[in-house]
Each structure stands twice: as structure tokens, then as C-alpha cells.
Image (tube, rainbow, N blue to C red; front, side, top):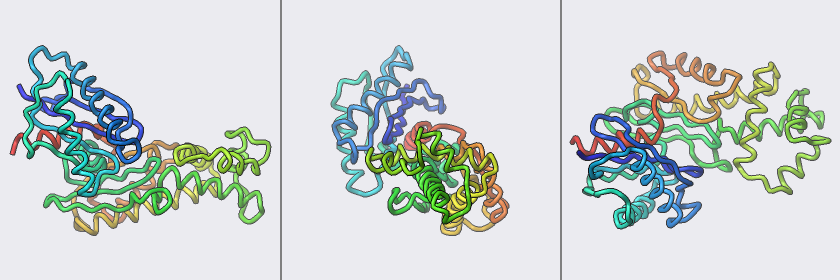
Length: 318
């Protein structure tokens, strides 16, 4: 029997699933990050190799593991030059001593960005839209004709509207404006002080600037805004509503670009922002359905690595 590999490679971890031709996951492995643009190609290779090894080991297959197809959905892979780099990585994988018999043809190697595998994994097929709102944000869609549209994904400086990072920044901004007297009072001021153990909100300067906080540390403050909104804070709710508006606008842009207003389709929401207590998912879904009545907003059915496995499997059935 032949098998396929689906790989989800991001900035924090790499997940690999080993799948058979009945869509059954036989083994799953996790390893370190695999965004080659931030950690380098050698470290990326090691992470992917480790994830594959763990997936094969977990499968406990007694016969030879023949790999007929592979899909790598990697963060930061979008340009032609990126794809060429990853093709070289796949060649290196086949030269390493993995417990695998590689039976790959060029047509059975798929290299794509992580938004596509999140879409396919989240819905279970390749038609629809994924709205990813975690540390960053991006909206990606594909229609029945294979046309795709991406909105956002420009990073925390140039974009990422509706992301945890932008929600956290807006929360800190609102707390400081409240402290100055420029805006109405908000519980975010005291919430941030307590969470960060600050004597004064002025100490936020030391935390953010002098400790050189990065995107992930700042984004981790988004739940403070979420909780304040769930507790009824007016300012926090305005911030959440603004995030929803941005995500609705981005999703609407994708629908207008590659679907019709009356298209029957699913929109899958992925990322930490959607797990909040302030019903941000319900707010988003209500706004989308009001504009596009035939759209259904769902949570992911499967993980992105499974989506990569499905894409790999498709190449063996053509």
C-alpha cells in the first residue's frame, strides 16, 4: 500500500500526518518551527524531517512505508523563489535516512502557503474561505474554478487587522488615552496593570519598549481586551467590533472577487481570536450572514496538516 504525507509548517511548530488512500490518518508527528525565512533552511529541514519520522513511527506500520505524494503547506511560502527553495528541501528529505520508501513524481509534490491547507483542512475540501485571526490575520478563498483570492496577511506593521496583535495594541492605546483623560474611562487600565503587575500604567513603557517585547508577547494581551468586552466594558467592545468589521470587510472582498453574492459556501474561522469569551465569532457570523445569506460560518472540521494530506491525496487520484 502507498501513503501520503501532509505537512503544516509554521513559525512555532511543524505537524505531519501520514494518511492512507481512504483519508485515514495513521500517524501524526510534531516538531519545531519550519518557517525557513526566519530560522533558515537547515533548521527547517530538521523540523520537517523530525515531524515525518514521528508520524511514521506513530503509525506502527509493519510493511514498507511507500510515500506516493507529499504536500507541504508552509508559512511564508508564496513566491516562485520560495517554492524553488522548498523543492530543494524535498530533495534533501529523500536523501536522508528516514524509514520511508520515496515513490514521488514531480506531479505528486505540492508546495503551498499555510492558508490553503487551513482552508482545505478546516472545511474538508478546497472550495470556500478561511478567515485566520491569530497573532496575525489573513483571509483566503478558492472557488470551484480554482481561482483564488487573498486579502491581508501583510504583517503587524502593514496590516493584520482583526488580529490578536492589533486588538492588544488597541487595548493598550485605549488604556493610556483613558489615563491621559483623552478618552472615556475603561476597565482596561486596571486590567492591564493587574495582569502585568504594574504599579502604574506608565510602567507599560518599560514593559513594551525596554524589554523589547515582540509581536507574540503583545498579541498575548488580546484576551485582556476580550475579557473586558465580555464583562461589558464599552471601550473594549468598540475594539472588538472594529476587529469584526475589518474581518467582515476582508471576507466580503474575497466573496466579491471569486464568488457571487448568492453563492452557497462555507467560511471557516481559525486562530486564537475566535476562542474569546466576548462572542466575537457570533458577531462575525451574524454580520457575514446578513450580507451573504447563503454563507455558513463554521469552526474547523480538521487541522491544517490533514488539509495538506487531502491535497497530497488528490494528486494520486487524477
